Amino acid sequence: MNNLVGDFFRMRLLWPQSRRRLTAIALNLALAGTTAGLMFACAESEPAPGDGANQPSTGGEGGALKLGALLPATGDLSSIGQNMPLAVQLAVDTINACGGVNGQDVTVIIEDDQTDPTAGVSAMTKLAEADRVAGVVGSFASSVSSAAVPIAVRNNIMMISPGSTSPVFTDQAKKGEFKGFWARTAPPDTYQAQALAALAKKQGFTDTATVVINNDYGVGFERVFVESFAADGGTVTNKDNPVRYDPKAATLDTEAGQAFANSPDAVAAVLYADTGSVLVQSAYRQGLMDGVTLLLTDGVYSPDFVEKVGKDANGVSLLSGALGTVPGADGKALEAFTAQWKDATGGKDVTAFVPHTYDATVLMMLAAEAAKSNTGTAIQSKIREVSNGPGEEVTDACEAIAMVREGKEINYQGASGNVDIDENGDVVGSYDVWTVKGDGTLEVIDKVTPGS
Image 1: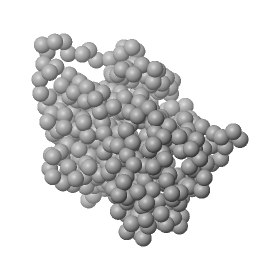
Image 2: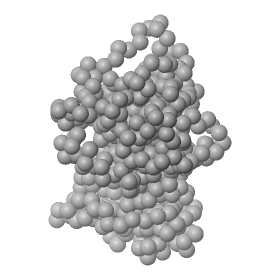
Image 3: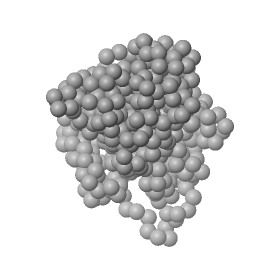
Image 4: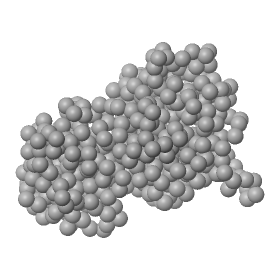
């Protein structure tokens, strides 16, 4: 299998068969859903025992730039994560097609973290100690990133997440725990929770309840939402008894009953697709959803989640009328990226967090070129320089790396946004408001900003 996947990942953006190869990658990602332990990697030979595979890494040791990706091809977030590896590969192929980094082609090794911290640690350890990558794009789940980032830091590997949005990372960065080896291209839930509270206020809701997945993502989001909604004059009915569900629970009847008790105007539900669908179905079976609006977040912004929840006897989605927020992609490069993505993937839609994944990968390569070195420490030293001003704004990845080669200062403007990474590794973004229609389709209907 590894040789087959490696062949797929050697495609070049300008090759005529690139579309067929990206389609093949997608098919292999789908196969991963039935093989929980499948790991995606380039067809490079693994270090043999005694070759130093278990020695501490220095985040790239010279030679061509080698990147890793730690993303959920399987597990609770696979419905959103399945296109992320394609975005990483597209970014790498784009840069390789216009000269590579520091005169050589970039390689990428893609691992499935299974939306599981334990699997994520195993895969991250492999990337760091066996593959000796300089940078890792990932993870998506905050719980996986929390488990993996200490491995990156102690091995001097730059880690950029396209979607781990827990506020915990900001707090840790402020304490200096990451030493600059952490960043993300999606804004933290400090902002999204404020945006969801602003949406609740805009809808005229005066009281809400909360129910969240019991991990860094869910609990961090919950705390900021409660504070923000209260600051806007609202009441969180279960503030003193928050409902936090076990992501490994088989049934969630009790948690659903607690969250929807006393018929609040809305329930802010911070969920993942698989377990979240179980909770919503339970609330429906208990007759608790009538007159209550579900407020959802980025973790379930997927047609797969709506399908998992299902429809009633009349064929109407059980989620009909639900509202949600998701980090929007509004970068200056979005239009051009969308055309590039559709061309390379045979017309696939640009799904949530795909632009953020692409931008994270491009930033890694730009930083290595700017540092004239292919190590994690080099990338870390230049990541803010290429993503922020005062350099010249540039949206095209090939144009950007050509300018860096010439020694020019740049300010990369991505497809996801301006990707201005601050001293804590954070960016600020806007949020799309989405809803679920009666037929189960998703539609973006508005935008909302934190504190609006």
